Amino acid sequence: MKFKRVLLKLSGEQFAGGREHGIDPNFVNNLAKELKSVIDKTKAEIAIVVGAGNFMRGASIAGKGVDRSTGDYMGMLATVINGMALVEALENNDQVARLLSKLRVEGAAEPYIRRRALRHMEKGRVVIIAGGTGNPYFTTDTAAVNAALDLKCNVTLKATKVDGVYDKDPTKHADAKMYEALTHSDALKNPDINVMDNAAISLAMDNHMPIVVFNLIPGNLLKIIEGQAIGTRVSSTN
Image (tube, rainbow, N blue to C red):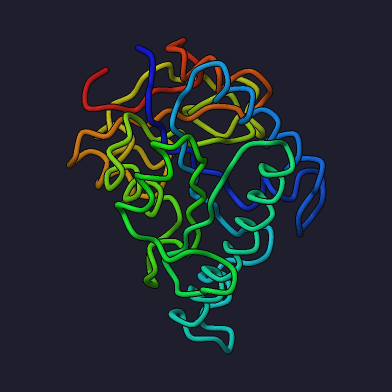
């Protein structure tokens, strides 16, 4: 099945590349080149939700002198920085892009308005969505599924640094086995399966939104959009 409109979720850690924190310009530039190539070849419409773990996580500083809501807003603001970097890289590689934010930061991004986002995508522009959901207590995973549903995407693509979803941590267990397919219910029931947080998976399950978890290495994004079986597919049925 070839996908026409996709939502790509990028974690903040990926923006750091090989660094411990911050933004690796080489990663961002290489990703921009790949996105440009994929769009040229497939004419797919792409929206991207960005995380901010390369700068901070709101939940990680909650209870350490910072209120949870304040920490989450700080994290949402950090996603704007990643979004700005990716838009610049895309534009520098001749791919038109727009940064839309669920938080009001008019000097840096357009406000997220559903019809505006759809119009940008229809015109072939990559839409980068920052600011999480715009509310505390929600992860950017949940923001990604929410955006995919709001923009009527065919699939949510969760980019990772491993090949898919395993029955246990493959970095710690040599005998870990990768799933080719799972149901949303399977992912929720098994605490050892790490797809997205439970709120995100539940939202996807309730609305029959498939999720593909895959390794963000060159070529994989194109293969998925063209319909090849890459990574682990999480859907209503196996």
